[in-house]
Image (cartoon, rainbow, N blue to C red; front, side, top):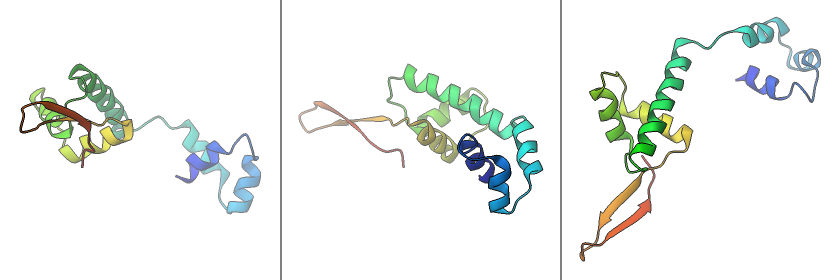
Length: 113
């Protein structure tokens, strides 16, 4: 997290000055900037694309339980908590469909907790 903050401040302050104040090593930051994303980040990015596609295909009616079931049906190994966290990070909230006593559908936004 420190490197992300330093990268965000790079235009405002000099890297050398920030590390002098933070009493850190610049070579760690520069090594971090050269790293390629790990397997977990690449998998999360792919999962994000899949979730966004399915969410839009189902017009926002599928929450994390249904999207998890869809992913598992395709052969993917993923848990509901991870799908819920990825949906939250992407800002995807499902639309719940409730039926009143008069059998009229009422749509509203709900959180996926």
